View 1 (spheres, one colour):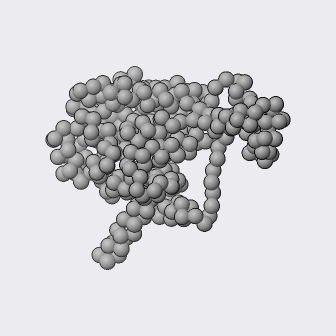
View 2 (cartoon, rainbow, N blue to C red; view 1 turned 45 degrees about the vertical axis):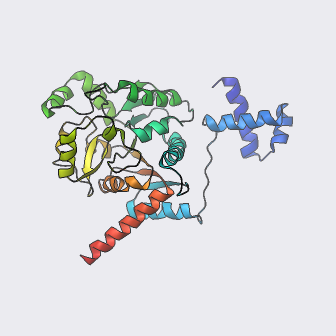
View 3 (cartoon, rainbow, N blue to C red; view 1 turned 90 degrees about the vertical axis):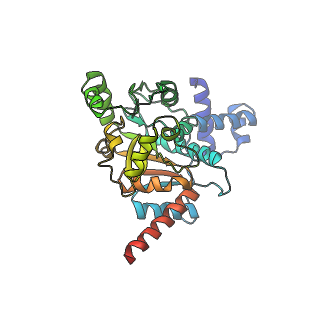
Length: 327
């Protein structure tokens, strides 16, 4: 982003969006071609100089968003995606919308916490540019396992966020899970680790997906060699339905007594609850069970999901309420 291109794009955007001039009229005023004006407007949108919102109190998406807010107390953003769309394409469309939604929520003098994973990886590829000052990006959980350090995977995601917001990145170079809870406790007492944990405790915004063993697009923590057969058996015995930043929970939102959490490097739920804005991105109906657990745990303030996932979430919640009333 150069000052000259930004200046011209901003001028064209002001004339087009605020003064309702046609592209032909803007071209004449700026002494350029209509195609150049079109490129300026595209540049303005791509680099965060313009934010476009479509609001209708009558369409089905607004109704879904209202129902989700009423039912779960979250700010919902429903992304219109045809039901026939493949899971991979659905994820890309939700991720694109989530990247645009995140931009106005994160600004100068703020700290953004990132939980790596397939969903946030997709979001990172669609981030528009936004210049911020005195802001920072922090990794929420370690990424190493017995096969890899995880540094390449997690650092690439963080790098994209850092570049998009012109913000320094703080990595968290620890494994996703320690072998022994005592090792984690000892590591958490180290000054170098405590510094990162302190940054996490001062987050203004947290961005994450929900991990699920049921997802059509496998969650990285379940498909990337982080868990062995004993771990999966332990999660099943504890009736785990999902995780946020490698911290596991049940359908009712409880997370106590889950042995893997004592070895996890993800932030304690009390740390997450203290974050003012907690943005969860979910794609596809196969993650709804994990999403319901996260909502029950009170982990989400803002939810970005596709239309099919929104309908499924509301339908399952209604069915659960009806079963509860009969019992």
